[in-house]
Image 1 (tube, rainbow, N blue to C red):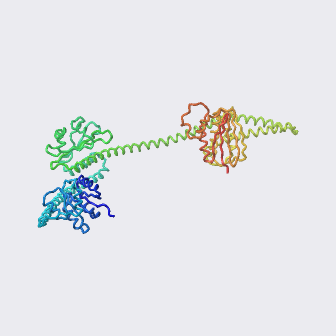
Image 2 (tube, rainbow, N blue to C red; image 1 turned 180 degrees about the vertical axis):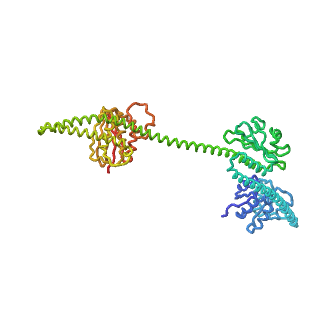
Image 3 (cartoon, rainbow, N blue to C red; image 1 turned 60 degrees about the horizontal axis):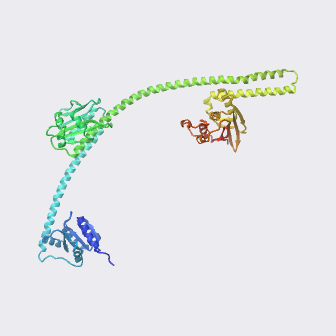
Length: 603
């Protein structure tokens, strides 16, 4: 079963097409539309419709020409073509029939009979020329074709003329832009403002054939405008313009990017003032370009005025003048900025040399001061150690004298005397150990540079020496009771002694902040790990502070308003130091005091 009849409507008027579409679609026809003759020919070849409704007055090819073109194609030789035309003259209908149309329907379309007219043609109706009218109709069609070709030829010639004019303008514009680009590259290394002004203004005057050209720009003092004018003998300075000059005030009120020329400028308030200043001649074509400041203040920075007598300015010439003034403005500002930067750079270089010398001197002074401070600190520490050693030395003297007295007896010491000898020897050994620990700790403190290198350490001995030194330095009060429970069977580790002395210092500082009566330092060994615990019986730690106990930079956080004991500030430092050894640090709250545990691998 065949589909609906396809109808192609070639019509340039959308309103006529919508009427045709509505009427024929309701009647069951498949509708297609082309708005131009050439497009209609292409669609006709693609669709091969049963009927083509062809408007005679089309924008590109006339309907007569379209019908002739369609009939030349064998595939469309039998296609029904009906002309839609508002022309009612007899020769127009005859021309439609002689060019290949099978009939015609007059416009405007009568919606009450239009469908019946179309169905009649589809049913076989055909219109024919009267006998002997073919030659006259062909002559009429030939004349229409010739007239159409003449119109198209004149349009083509006019378009070609306009294209040649545009091409000439584009070539001229391209040449001017090339010279402008070359100029911009040439003035990049120039730092002298006067030289930049002369180069840009001279090229602008040549490109646009100015007879008068004057450029004003704001003086450095911002008190007046200074300018250069082009004369037959070259450029010369013009009288200055005060800030309150009417021309300055009027130009200041113009918006950014404004370019005034021709009648617009002649009718402005500044026209007569420009003539008095000899910026332009009364009968010439004037030009005025204001220059706005690029510093963000949006104030008038300068202005360019020019004229020529030959012809009015083309749009591209106004753009070219604006680009030249923009290049001039940017180049002058950049040159001033670069000059300022070079001067600043030289001043900074001189200042840097002075700062470098001062820095070297400061480092020398700092080194001398540090050496002096170290000597002062060590001197105080030696004084405290001397006082600390008075007790052990006194015991050594007493016990040595008592022991010597026993040893001088000729008889064998009695059992009770031997016990006393052993007690004296124990006292002597303890005092010697205490002195030895203090001396080793002091030597380590005095040689911090050597203590920063890794070595095999006995942590038990290191902790005991550091406790003695802390007592001597006053960091550990005499009233604070420190209990040692160093029970780990293995206490040797390869590391830096200052790392562990710092950790012990942080742990003791944390413990002492709770004002304890007793601090216990214990060690143990479990599952291949060395454990260090510092426990105090001071005030308990508020649980709300435990989550942030090991956060870095604790002193930078604001102190909470609530009262209560807080973890020591040095615990975060303990975590960072022990990470390098693969160790961990944890703090355990207790009903009274706290316990900090460090776990280190010793494999």
